[in-house]
Image 1 (cartoon, each protein chain N blue to C red):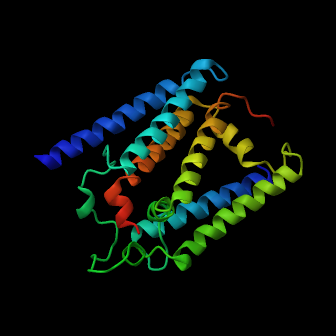
Image 2 (tube, helix red, strand yellow; image 1 turned 135 degrees about the vertical axis):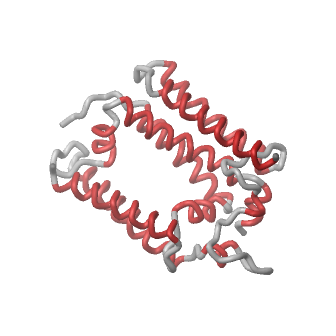
Length: 70
Length: 164
């Protein structure tokens, strides 16, 4: 496993940890849901969220069956 | 009775999303049908969230009615804002900003190396490896659809007002 892959795993673990702490109600940490909901309350935020969501779908699921390059 | 109807509706929506995700991830990539399978939810989210925002249509992914949901651990008090109730502010978002910043930095570094480095892969490279198996694609597509359903749900007029 390369250093870069480990770094991505670390970021994913950090994200999951934060989400868990937020859901458990640890003071000073918010979970992703309320944060995205807050962003969604603004017109520009809503636009960016929808565009970002569409980008994720098009980018990852139009190339999902491509074999790994490495 | 209303609560049971809401739970049943929620289960129905989850089941439908799961089935759709299974079907969509079974399609061969780079075909017209595979593009349509991603385009259809995208169009639905744009149209339904706009209708929902204007109060012409209503949908919630949760079983509870919107006003009684326990978004916050602390009970809502009169005059309290969404930020105060849910503790969403710059300080509580800082940890997320740091994580996203690290991800953006790592992605930029991977791209600066040409985007094909075997030592420092981009997020797309890592995700490609994960999405090789159909079961993993199914789960990922289901999560993507779930996030889309949340976007429609958050666009509800009363919910949007409650977050201001």
